[in-house]
Image (cartoon, rainbow, N blue to C red; front, top):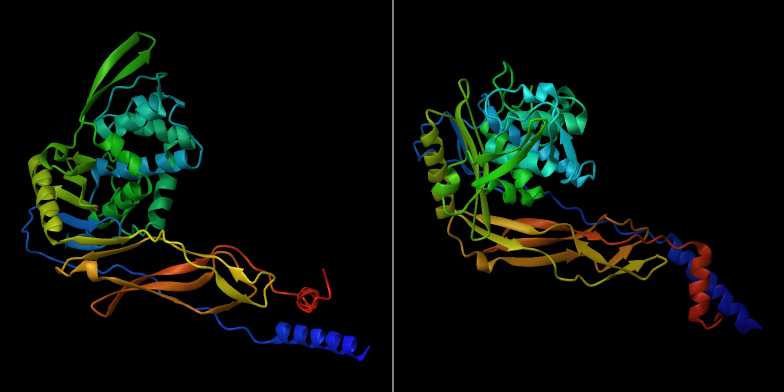
Amino acid sequence: MFKRFSTCFTAFFLCFCILFQNALPLYATDENIPTTENSDALNLTAASAILMEASTGTVLYEKNATSVLPPASITKIMTLLLIFDALDAGEIHLEDSVTVSEYAASMGGSQVFLEPGETQTVDTMIKCITVSSANDACVAMSEHICGSEEAFVAKMNERAKGLGMNSTRFLNCNGLDTDGHVSSALDVALMSRELITKYPEITSYSTIWMDTITHHTRKGDSEFGLSNTNKFLKMYEYATGLKTGSTSLAKYCVSTTASRDGIDLIAVIMGAPDHKVRFQEAVTLMNYGYSKCKLFTDENKDILPPVCVNFGVQETVSCQYEEPFYYLDVNGADISSIQKNIQMKEVHTAPIQEGDIAGKAIYSLNGKEIGSVNILYSNSVSKMQFFDCLEKVLHRYGMTK
């Protein structure tokens, strides 16, 4: 009798100890912010330029990169970004039919001569915008997604704000000269980076050199040839895109992308004096970038062991990396010597919320920290209540099945 009473008293005592012991604080981490290096040794003639590495957002070269300038048809990078956003959200589909309005068909400048009432698929419209810089296709897509170009442009500006494009104000979706329609080389690089990293499938369109579409109108069917306005594709072996632009106000602009040895670079030229210079200076930027860059990548696909949970309804919780780690070296360091060190407490305290920070992976080169990646809890663990504790303790003493 006394032995049974003693066991029960011990169980209650242990429950209260478990429930009211103070929990340890979670490990806090800092954001991984890419560094910026400036250079002015390339003697570019364009009014503004920037070179950016895509995975880290590191700026390798800049010339008047925040100067506010008319962007011409490189505006269409944002138009394409919103189209792919809509595809990603399931709001539209590549095979959907898009009907061309009279307003869309009335656009001047570069176009594929869509007629009012003509229908084309979303896939064809993307091709027309990317390859032939079609103003009419841009407006048709803006109306298809948002009902009007005005509503679409509002979304363009909202998206730009979210990307930190502080020098940008869009007034149309195609880049035709309009007073107050402005951007900057830095902002163009930011939206280019978002497009190629979030939707790498854009390269299946931006690398097309020549193609044809078929016009389906009341007059019958007719073929129309598409020729890529981006001559950079033929001038640079590793080119992957992206978009040209030219108007009387903007002069000659281009946002070029390339991929070499696992490194994606973005070179933006704005206000070049002629169409040849914009491509030549983009090549100069790319050659400069690839001569300096080495990229270390850790995809962080290794499985982390579960960690112990104190005062939880589960004794352990699994963890995962928040994202891959990228480090761009421009100083000739031996990136193969980069080391990763996992910093986590041995015991973690309930309650635990899925997605909260559990610790971090710290990367160092030659003894100096170069960045980190958060480690997150993969699932939630509730804190034990009194009867959870009681059941656990009684089970430990063999008093329950």
